[in-house]
Image 1 (cartoon, rainbow, N blue to C red):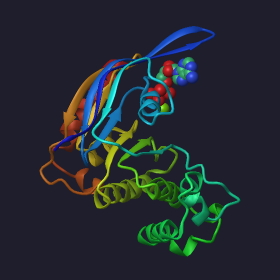
Image 2: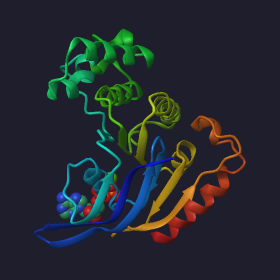
Image 3: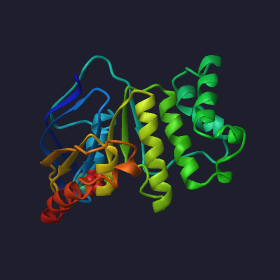
Length: 248
Ligand code: ADP
Ligand code: MG
């Protein structure tokens, strides 16, 4: 597979009243087209900083980010940030509205996405009538509505309970595969990382740099909940757990 994106010698220094903080130090990795890459690392190591830079929301200090062609980026955050005064449909349409692309065709597309992912009967209801898991699904549809090539997910499920996270992990996996997206997902949950991704990148504590990269080769690669039962699952879990533990 071709590379979708290359990160070369990326560094980030924050400057504030306390001086300088080196958050990311000389990071190098690539992401292939249609690959799911999970990034794990200790709290505060620079994961959100990395996604912010990739999304174009934060300036880098040095290094390069090379996209293969013009890539549209979709970012999904930990909190669903749905507006309580807008219907589910209008919440899902916000991005399109802001980019002046809210037309009949796109509204139809979003309605179809809502239907496909079991939310059509809530289209004209408000977020408070939805469970946390459903709200996060709306947030994902809002991101997909913009038709991004690369999805950036910053701990998208960490605010949800375990059962919901498992279900959404399967949903997310299917959606990424069906829609043919490339995805970079940050998570602090090692099992979630292994179960959903093709590769897991382990970062060191701050300033983050690469500790290890694992290609996840399971006997029967399937949906995340099935992957968790794979005979090789614990092998990867132990390796990554040790990487992170040594870091702390
Ligand atoms: P993570 O997402 O891995 O928990 P972050 O990327 O949010 O970590 O933060 C990495 C480091 O950079 C932290 O030590 C944090 O305190 C620091 N940092 C984040 N944002 C800023 C900022 N705006 N100014 C100064 N330091 C920051
Ligand atoms: Mg973070």
